[in-house]
Image (cartoon, rainbow, N blue to C red; front, side, top):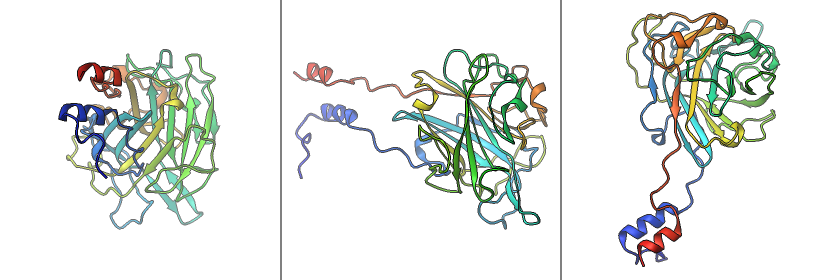
Length: 311
């Protein structure tokens, strides 16, 4: 069938196409896609929490953690975040015990928030108790309003399921927290068996075997395209309209300790920033967060403007 805009001047046709409905939401898979563009931050330190696992390990299994790079963009009312790397996640056969290190994500997108985390933040369940992180101080210009975490669980679905959590961080504390649900590795990232009214998604691909090196020195550069991917509807974080700042790091299983795998990164040679209560990012060189701004709208964004241009 002939296109209805094939006869229009090239410049007008292009402008009309810019007004067309956006493509459907991206699949959340745990694999880096071209839509993310270049990284917002890249790792500058080896990992003090194990790097990568054994290449002979099966899917859903990794004996180490690393964050190689951070990516993000906003599209169709959703904040997309991608952290290339891997997380410690494995099953101890003797006793069937799940071992993990979670990825904690803090989002600053509104006035207020907590520049230093308070002791009266939500306790969702054992091992997802934000009071364990009380005292953590962020960069001077960073005061998160929301927290998300993904990792194993002692009371929810065990290995091979990863479990996701969410909490609000109001200025005075006393926010709300919830278990979002569970997922296994790979797409589509849809969470089940939890309370997730806004449809937050997370997917992970734990198959990275390209190590940064174990320790605290300068890492070997690696191009990792698998990791942890979030899709967070803006409605879940108060519908912000401006730029969004994100800090993420690999924490200890109880969230009381912080590894050196942080985005934005800390300088090489910094082996650990533990415990959380004694950690002050504002005293560390550089920004321990990344900034994601919504795309600039098309210059000619209304039909009225187009009519005025082509009368």
